[in-house]
Length: 473
Image 1 (cartoon, rainbow, N blue to C red):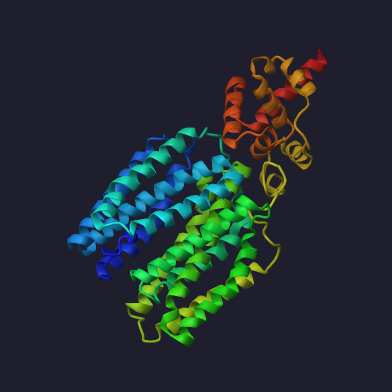
Image 2: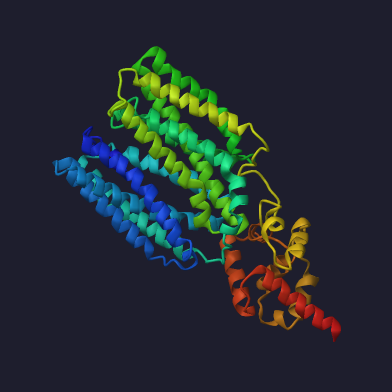
């Protein structure tokens, strides 16, 4: 939003230092927050949103004071970048917990629509007088961000997430290819944004239009079709477009620079949104820590942005600056995109996050076979291989209600228990019972508390133990 007031954006060294340090500190604090929050994410208080909102408001106020009244220095720019990086990292991870709790269907709509709203608000800010826009950035927007995040966190029923660290090799094997391709596009965007000055009014407008077009495309496809996206197919589809626009400024001059900015903004935002959706979906379906999965998916993207931005500064303003920077930047971007196409074509194709998969607990069928060494792993895999095609029958619920364990459970909780015992995931239960995944997690949490268990496998063992005792009697 700070780019929403063109009168305040300054092509100074201090402003450029702020934009660079903001990206670096976002990456640093995101890594730190992933490590810190991974252990406490199931009990993060909703009031944490106040901390992030306060940091955001403080950064906006200092930014306006520094760049509108001239009270800036290099150390101030670095401080501003650190404050905004911390606020962004906390907001990103807290929202990821919310998105993962909502499941694929809602996340695939919420993410692009919220991104589209950002673009609309930013364009509206550019039409306001500077005092009104400044008030919105310092007060209105941080308050709105804090309020919505706090309300959303309060609705999240914490669920005992499985630790993703023992399965790191499998998780990386599932997601490395789309993450790498998305990182390459983000690198190309960050690098090529230095061909026109990023603080130029027309360049910023072109970038915002590209962001908005990407958000609108994903939202429209998710709302009005059932096809969804395959991330690698999207990468291969946008590759020719990006390759053409990268060549336009080289052959036809600077009048094509803004088109290049808009096209690469479109491509980078498109793949980033798909990665965000994939992270939320993967965490929801595998029951892995959403913070850990988000770190796996997004930290490489942020690192690619920092590397591209740093190289862009060096080619335009630093020791590597030459009159042929447009040619050099375009050549590097094209080489990176070609590498991505080659990697996307290797080996087994990755199934995108919006593509239908089975209703098992995990996406990778070899996950338990490769890593779980407990005595029940064979039985768990057997239950995952065959899943029910319909909701449990009334006779099954009645049988559970007649047991000693089932007498303290409500009718809905008995239904959820029956489906859990058949191997259904939270996502599958929510779809078949026509309730949200958050509500399903709430039922599951109460079931665990009433029966004094802590995992699905303990629940299965408990009911199978009672069944065995009943047969002996």
